[in-house]
Length: 377
Image 1 (cartoon, one colour):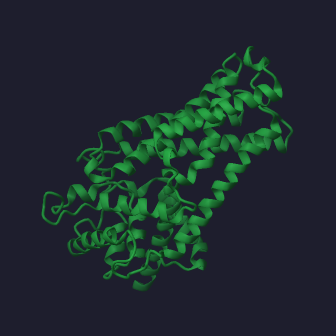
Image 2 (cartoon, rainbow, N blue to C red):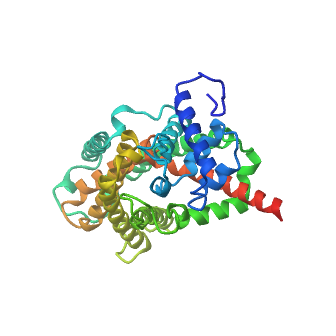
Image 3 (cartoon, rainbow, N blue to C red):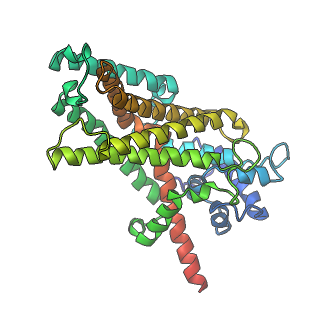
């Protein structure tokens, strides 16, 4: 169903959109939070809220929760205004609606399912390794070459298939979302809006609330969430640089692993792994202390599962580096490869996909801001 379907009583999300509209109309009348983040100035421009509007605003929200702390109408007030929670519900609805096929993969939606999937793939890779390259590598010190454990062609094939699938699923979801929030296809190629949105994303500008930090996990402003989120984000990007640089060295320059400790793949991979590990642990601590009244249990579980998946991915990668000249190399490598392949395969069906919709809403908002500014000149 199109998010802008306004027919009363249609679809399973009618009550959710009705409650979101009720709360946001109160917010639009109050406007006390106008300076906290882009959501509230964008809301002021919308006197009659559509489902497309509410979906866009929910994904534009960075969940800093300053609005909840500042609001005089939160529970137990009779108005029961709780933007962080209703936005979380709308974001969940976004993921379920635009990721095709169904985002809900049962046991893969929680921590236990992700870990079991990683172990299952790791065991399968172990069996394949023993059958194809022999068992010697499992009983002796490794030389640091992954191809001594899993053949080059097989490794490329099993990694490429889930990666390409996930990219395709997320691109399709992004296209459907962009059109459904009322944007034109041509607007997706507005370079100036992209530059502004990417600049804001790079520094997590909208996760600062009223410039004092998130009211998360408690009611006092703190920069802890933003810092840990950036550690995870930039750590993840550095590991991507590591993988990309290794591919360049191998396929364009004919240099095969293992690479020197001071090489680009090893330095960026190590630094990224350490950063993301520290950030993930910090986010887990904050998540444990966070007030559940401001979110949903399913969103909290999705957040926690993603953080644990990142931890397994990063710690196993660091284990491969540390043990690459020991007998631990083969088991650590298959565990890491299992984590990588599972991450590739299920990325669209986890909380990881949130950045796709959030970034698109940021681009749409920046275009709106530029048009508004131009109209007032």
